[in-house]
Structures are given as C-alpha cells and as structure tokens.
Image 1 (cartoon, rainbow, N blue to C red):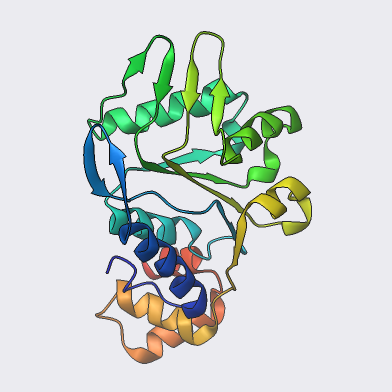
Image 2 (image 1 turned 45 degrees about the horizontal axis):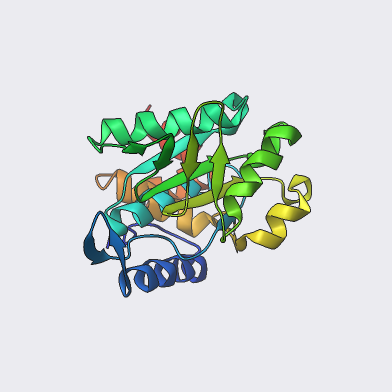
Length: 219
C-alpha cells in the first residue's frame, strides 16, 4: 500500500482508499481492451493547511491505480491551453502516447492535481469547470477538442472560503487536519530512524509543520 507510511488523517486516508478500490473493482473499454477501471469515479477536492501532505496522498493514490500523476501549479495557469499542455508533457514523461483523430483528442487515464485552485483567474476557472460535467467533460481549444472523460481531476486549497460554490457542489470534499505533535514526531522518526525518540519529540515541539520539521532535522 503506497499510503502505508502516511501519518495522520486516518479517516480521510480511508475515504481516499475506498475511492481507489472502487475504481479498481470495475472495468471499462480502453483502446479495444477490457481493463481495470483505473479511473477515479468522483471529482475530489482536498482541503487542508499547508504542508499537510495533499500531494503525498495523491501520489500514493496514483500509485495504487498505476496511473501517471500530473501536478499543475495554479499560480502558473493562465489559460485552459496551459493545463492541456502540462498534461501532455506529463504523459510524454511517462512515455504514454496521445492519439488524435480529426481534431479530437481523448486523453488516456491519468491523475491531474491542481493545488490552490482558488488562485486561478475566474475566466479560466469557468473553462475548467466544464471538465467536471460528467456528460461531456470536454475542453474546446483553438485547433482541437480534448476529451477528459478518463481523467481523474483533483483540486486542492488551503482556503475553503475562497473556493467557488461550483467547485464545492461538483466535487466530493476531503478535509485534512494539521498534524499533532505526536504525529510530527513519528514523521521525523520515519525519515530519520537514527534519531532518538526524545530528539524527534523535541523537533516536533519547535517545528509544527512537517516540511519545516524535516528541513530542521536535516541541518
């Protein structure tokens, strides 16, 4: 289980695992073959404070489904074309071909994660919301039409209040909590097994964010 070493938010991890197993338990037709349905059955929003492990969780999720993980920084998104191009680049890195037929591209199964989605310009958000429409999930670009029906889209945010209502209603919500001192101590111990319990606990007391605790431990 790629999520075995994730510490904290046990209930939320269990929900994510249920999505993964549900996807693996069914099947669909892809390129003329009956294959495991490694496509997320829902649109999912991951909420939580910075450095709580949203990306780590979703990388583990993609590993369970054996699908490419494509992460896109929201602050760099200027257009829907940018999102499509980043997905193409990600798939190329995984040596996955993208087929085009008469100007229509059907993206293969993959996991796409857009963190801090509330930072995207409203006009671009409107376009991306069309990808969440189950009956269509189509993106119309200048020269091609892109089908996203086999793509699992995750969004993330640290500020639920800034998330548009359309995202709140179209996405299932998973709320992650910040780590406790005990959980932070376990995270340090997992990454630095040579440290004593007392050292790990001391680091957890002064550095309450996992990324900072690990950076401090590396000094």
